[in-house]
Image (cartoon, rainbow, N blue to C red; front, top):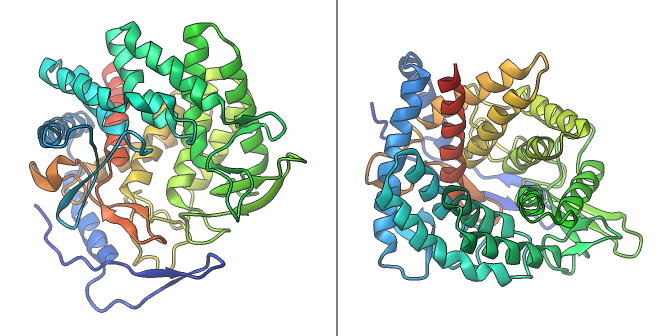
Length: 420
């Protein structure tokens, strides 16, 4: 049964030192509504997981087609979100540009939909100019999530050529003294900022090394992962969002947040990036230290006292006003995809737990609370994600990367269930 509630936007203000304070609620809170909806999930948990997956993928397929049709009116643009009743788009230079093409490739392949695969080709081409960008670390997101799927599915050298050039652009951001790829450009606050999100670009470099025989991109990826492991994580295995390095000594000079609640908080999507990144790096390298790190991050997350029962995190695990804080479906989707992979790589006693939490997350995201009805949100798939709450933008909206990792997680889980 579709829940219709009055949503109240959580207002938050952040002081200059990064501390957040929540404002009072005057109406039924967004989180109260989600708690009520979660209680209603009990009737949906009897649905076999295989049916949940196929139902969700079918809805995702239809929504992706609707959004692809909408993009025909936006030449050279790519979808970003649906906010205040409007489709918001971006160009190839935005860090999210590759996610929708990647979603089309995955769904087109799954459903053997030649029309959707043609749409994927057309929209992927819009991202190509990103291969020359040297002012961003996000080329893994932008190119590997679009051109990477294109090359995997078609085997066409054109796609590999774009990926190769993009990898060379990304490698210009390497600093050997620091031992990491630079995320954002130098500013008044940070000399050499590296964000936890940057772990997600390492798969791109490992792929290029494997395809071309050039060992250097893989070495860079490994060194970056080692530097991040050493400096980004606290004793409880939560991660800072931003670590900035002194380029003379190569040592950290600042550990902060940009999108989290405060410098010492556990920004939810950042924790998911870390989990995904080290799980992926273990798959790529088989280095035991990456598996240990992935296990530790997973343990921190699944055991967190403020992870809700339905397993969709608040936008920050230390957000003010919990349980009346915004949820982040994107953090849940990324986490679920990572946990599914970790459950297959980890031969330890908690592997079944990783999978069980991911299944719960996907059940929740596939419920009427989070999964959009056909035709809603201009074709975006999931509701209730948070982009940058302290900045006041993309709050409680659909996001293209939430959809991408949701589809990826569904396909990963379906493969496991089908194998059994």
